Image (cartoon, rainbow, N blue to C red; front, side):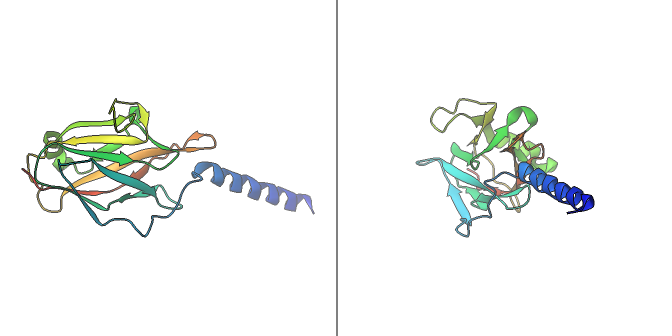
Length: 176
């Protein structure tokens, strides 16, 4: 093998290793069994929305693709990330309003929004794979619902991937 070929082979190995270290090992395509809509209400258990990574990108899908907060008050929703992914709240991660025209509406509808240690204690955490919402649900959302984004980071071999992952769920408030 010539020295030029060895250099090219080394460069190819470096590129392959670099690509491996920036994409989490658990990156998978969304399951074909993703639920279309889940109706969340104040009766019974909280709703759990699972976030699934899309292979080869920093985008994600939420299972279910649409969350409808039914009539009633005090609706609990947990956002669950895949293994090796977390909400880094000091870096602005969380479930956030995407459309600035909807900030005032969203601010009046959710009393608690934070990363939490687990579903039972709901103790706030700086780094967690769970994000909690407590919806007051006192107003009906207009039109196509409220636009949110789920922003989080995943671990790599070298720490956390600096580029955040983002999912765009659709959420509707049916109101009181």
